[in-house]
Length: 410
Image (cartoon, rainbow, N blue to C red):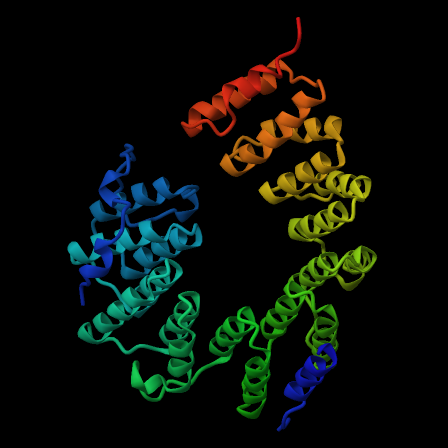
């Protein structure tokens, strides 16, 4: 099966080289008006500092300031604010801001509408995305290839594969004749097909891209490499990388991260390490995702000491641990019975105030239960932190009796 799949990939690459919307917003549970108010200085000059936005509340407060500015900021400024909120992945808030803009008669443009459609698609409400499409026409805007591509991605995210393929092949049926799919569009369809394991269709799509002289870029290849690696099909991923380099497209950090993850998944940890170690020689710096994948691979192979040494490397290379790093290392140490080092990781989490969240608390409960079983105890600072987190969370993720059992014996 693998040989035939590889052949299919090679053949694919070797092809001929020559208005106001009301109903969509009504489902949102979060309310723009429910957000807390803060006093911010009023400035009559439309000089807007978007660098002050560190959390979503900051964006909402800045939006309120902008509403009071005279002259009113342009649509470009409001779009910039929306894009910041979208990058924070607070899609419902972005939609509420948009709704408020429409209520107040603040002008919008094609870019605004495309962002709103994207938000609905990312919330798995592509149906509302199409409702916004209706507003495009009412407001006199012409949907473009970005609109087209976003809706296709939304259909795939909503598991509406047939509809996505129909829209891709016949955009004139639902959007507008004359729109030609670009590389981003093809990549979106390719991602959807690969996620479903439709390799033959993916090969046909690559052939179509080559035939239609649509550029294959590093993202195109990374989609294939990542998809094959996630399926444990590392041989096929290697073929894609080989073709990639033959076409003078250099693998990037994303490519290498996918390979590291793929080799780790199939237990080829030595190969994963070789890929990791080869990155600097190619002018690439491993990122925290690179480390997370390799740490996970070592832990799964029971090589916890190697994982631990990698874990210690992260800050020395100018990187910061994330939730996945801590969770992977903690779980690996727990399974190996390395509770002393596990406690060190647990304490390190204390210093990273934003990291001891519910998903880590659940992992921590298992760890704490095992500590108690082995007769180990926690210091008062760690116990105090856990109690504070329980109060913040408002539920018994880690019951107090679990913590009390770990109090130092007096």
